[in-house]
Length: 190
Picture 1 (cartoon, rainbow, N blue to C red):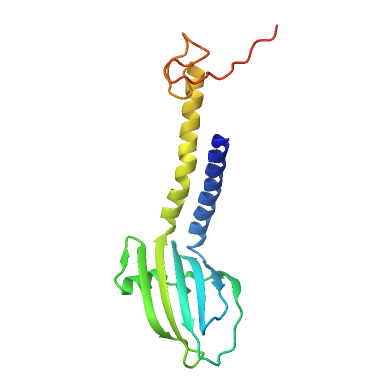
Picture 2 (cartoon, rainbow, N blue to C red):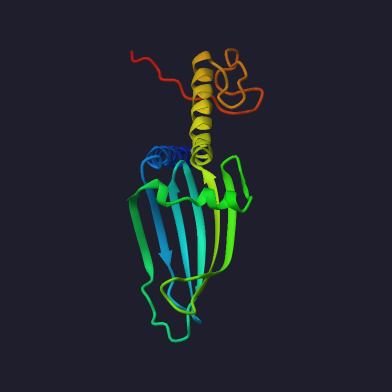
């Protein structure tokens, strides 16, 4: 059961690795964004967003303080696809604040004017990181699963214990080193 769960986690990680690699390539040509807006509570509204552009990912939170008489806006999910990458320059914003290093960055701004509403202010916080870090992180589990599987098959082929690698030619039923039972061998039909 545990091995199946690990294989499922590795397969899921591999799918996410391929998806992030595709998004990385796509980010060179288009900027995609996913946003979630909360409803207005106590004259505050939050916008959570993730953007992929120019080889980087950015995660951010905007908190807007609306005037008392501001009507409640819509809340929910929004997706923006295929904007030109030059429109989204979050890493440059982090560089301007001096908080960028090797493609990683963080930035924050406070009391921004919201241009279309008089008296509205916003605070923004964002972090930026390269797609390559996420691709490598998602590739670790499938690589380990492949290495362990290869090692297990090689041990079984050589007649070694699949758990510890001890030579089982003298005691083919049970490993004298770790006590693990040897895998069942198919018998020849008479």
